[in-house]
Each structure stands twice: as C-alpha cells, then as structure tokens.
Amino acid sequence: MAATSGDGDDALARALAWVDEGRAVAIATVVNTWGSSPRPPGSLLAVSGDGAFFGSVSGGCIETDVVEKAQAVIAGGRPLLLDYGVSDKQAWDVGLACGGEIRVFVERLDDPAMWRGLRDRRPAALVTDLVAGRHAVLRPGAAADGDLAPAADTLTQAREALLRDRSTPLDDPAGPVFVRTFNPPLRMFIVGAVHIAQELAPMAARAGFAVTVADPRDSYATEERFPGVHVVRGLPDGILEQMAPDHRTAVVALSHNTMFDDPALLVALDSDAFYIGALGSRRTHAKRLDRLRVSVEDESALGRIHAPIGLDLGGREAAEVAVAILAEVIAARHGKDARAADDLRAIA
Image 1 (cartoon, rainbow, N blue to C red):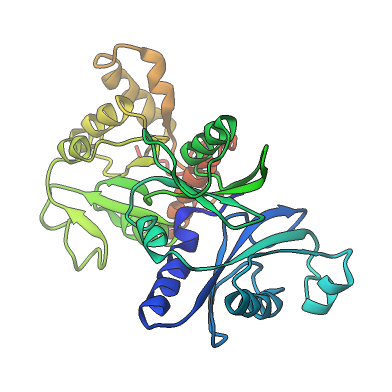
Image 2 (cartoon, rainbow, N blue to C red):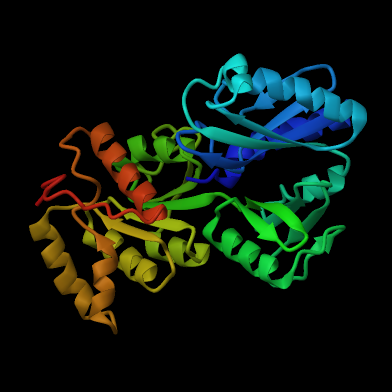
C-alpha cells in the first residue's frame, strides 16, 4: 500500500504555513518499509525548529526520535536517512515494537516555491536524491525540472509511479532516489441523491475522494440532506460527461431509476473510470444489461459494471451498504480481486 497524495497534503500545508510565519521547517518522508510498518511510503511529517510537528511517519512509534533528528537537520542543513527496525536496539528505544522496518528521509524545507507547486492539484512526481537531497519535479508531458538529473530509465519508472499513484524508492545509477507522487484527489460520482448516497458521500470524502452527487430532483438534491457535499441538480449523464471521468474516477449509480442510472452508466462505460457500480439485485441487473446492450458497440464492456454493487458484508442498512460499496471501490483502486455480493441489496 502506498500513501495517497492526500495523506501528506495536510502535513505539507502546515509546513508551508510555518514557513510563512518565518519558522524553519524540515520534512520527514517515509521512503521505504518492510514487514508490518504502520505507515506506507510517501507518508509525511512536518517539523518546525521549535519542536512542533504535524503528520505521521509511523503512527506514533518513532515520531519523537524523528522530530529530534529533524531539528538537527534544520540546524545543520544536511539531510539524514534514518532506519528503524525491530532488530535494532534503537528501534526498541524509540518504541517501534509493532514489527517491520521503516526508512525515513529528513530534509530541510529550503525551496518553498517548489513544494508549493506540488500542491497545485496537477499531477507531479518529486524525485529526491536520498544522499544530497537534490530534487527533480516531473509532470506529465514535460521534462524534469530541478537540480537533480535522473537517468532516463529512472524517469520512465517515475512516470509509471505517477500514473499508478504509488510513491516508491528507485535505484538510479547515481544513487538511491525516492519518487513521491502528488495527484489531485480521486473522484467519486454518485448518481442519485438517495439515502445510501447520504451515507456513502461523507465516507468516501473521508477516504480521500472528491465526491459529486447528481440528481435532477429538487427535493432530493438539497444541501440539508447532503451537508458539505458537492450536490448538483441536473441529469446525471450530462453532468458526468462534463466531468470527463478518467482513470482516477469511480462512478456509482444508486438512484434505482432507469432514466438516471442507464444514461450515466453509458457515459461511464465510454470513459476510463476505474470503477463502475450499480445498485440492484441480479435480476434487476440482468434487465439493465438488456437495456444497455443495444447502446454499446462492444458488449464485453458491460462486464465492467459491478452489480450487485459492493462487497458481500452481509449488511442491509444504508450505512452498511455504503461501507460495502466503498470497500469494493477501494479494492478496485488497488487492483484487488473483490467479488460483488450475490444479493447485497435485493431491490427489484
């Protein structure tokens, strides 16, 4: 598992806010893990010169030691590559008793403009030299920019990591590097402002998705029913088409109304959406496929629709169904072979 872009966004935002206040700051990044380490590669911890810290590199096991080392980096300027593991006496001293090993790179935040640029919601990969702390910023379709010049093969692997949204260590001919990916949030488009959507939308937001709920019915698509959620009144297929779903988009059809679900599903099937799901029993879905079949060129594309939607967790309440749906979306995002329920919501 790798850290998502959103995992470190708050820590980076806090670090830059401290810089604006005139405080010296260091950034600690998990650059590799082995075993059952609690935080994945790419996780960030911001540390100020006065000892304040924000974020996490281990869930609390080694933060105290990392903060101490980070203050030394702030004072001296030279980056540090730190290793913690259960086989090391130091690991027990700092509390890493949960198993596994963690490698953390600590550097002073000396180029705020570069770090600010990584938060502009455009895909980017930060390639960091783990010896001298030099950097190269890589964006799709553009040459690398910075004081680090990675080898061509390293750049190719970094672009692949960015596409997969997987922060990862790499071996460059000049020495070890780490690729930290920065991507805009994953998106979830929900068709139908129904009761399950009321449960699913905030859950998905907490999981890092930028959520949009679409429904043309004024009495359904209200701020009161969806506080803090981006709700759009209108026909879902037109709204989804404007969104241009890509490989970072999940489409979830929950309205159980063929006039809303079917056209939106056709838009989703014509896109690179990584997940497409639809509410309904197997019988309901069989009828849905019959309707959609006449509108698709390649009938095999209909196999992309997860229906009945969600993992078979056995729940029937709206919140339980929402958990099952989100679990299946996350599994699909990470390439897991998650099977849909036989009849999660047997709504005929």
